[in-house]
Amino acid sequence: MLHYAVIFFIVAIIAAVLGFGVIAGTAAWIAKVLFVVFLILAVLSFLRRKAV
Picture 1 (tube, helix red, strand yellow):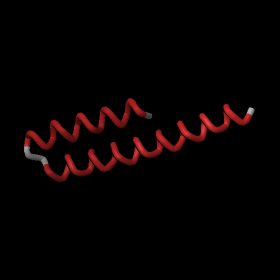
Picture 2: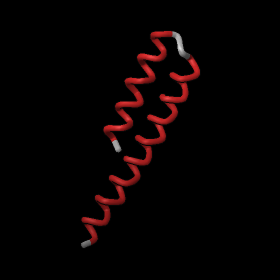
Picture 3: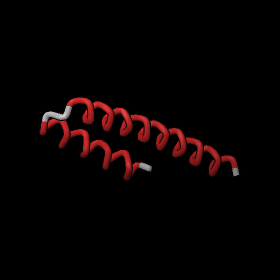
Picture 4: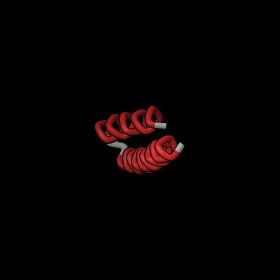
């Protein structure tokens, strides 16, 4: 999931440089969402390992 967040971040940077503002904004938003989901799952996984 972190891999896809990085991919969308790179797409957002390239789209912004080329002047595609809507695509850049959407790709950046998707990258943020994927990164937050990754963080939540990572924390839950870490806490679950500690409990066992």
